[in-house]
Amino acid sequence: MVSDEKSEGVPSRRERRRSATRQRLLEVALQLFCERGFEATTVEDITEAADVAKSTFFNYFETKEAILPALAEWRLSLIEQAIQPEEGAPLSPVARIKCILSLLAQDPVSDQLLAQRLASAAMPRNHPLCARQALIRLLTEQIRQAQAAGEMRADFDPAYLGGMIRAMFFHHMVLWHFGDRSVPLAASLERMVDLFLDGAAGPSWRAGR
Image (cartoon, rainbow, N blue to C red; front, side):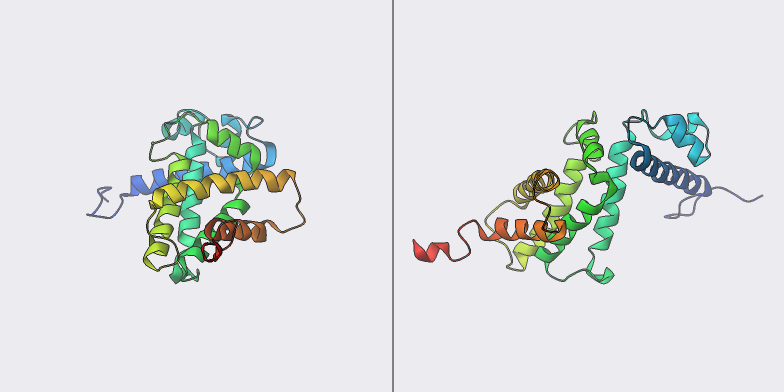
């Protein structure tokens, strides 16, 4: 008889099946949300497309809304992987911050309606799966590295700066979507980061005081 017991550090067959089912639900849910919209998509739609029983969905997520933070966590993990230097990302931490924002802007989870739904999802702001906290953690780590490399001032709390960049990103997305879209979004975001780092007066403003 083949045992389902896992070796130390190796997931068991049951755990691998559970992980694969959860991932399938995430992928199908995101696809349907993008195609039909969040409101028009039901749990039955998701489970039918994923070819699992409706009860299976509730083994992983309490409600349809509860899948949103997991979606954001999954998509952020893909972005985190993409910005690793060994994956071809820039060596400069500031350049990687720009990559994070550019990739996030292109991600389906950043769709305006989905983002609004995610922001209103019933989850404490300090919850480890909270999308806000996950993005701030990702930005904070890059800011720490930028400070260590001398690319950013070291006299500010990295988490504070991460929160500011996150807030500026979502504000910028709203302005871009409803304002002048003649400048490509990626270039517009890069300009935003440069403005944040240099300040409105430019990097040499102190010399002129």
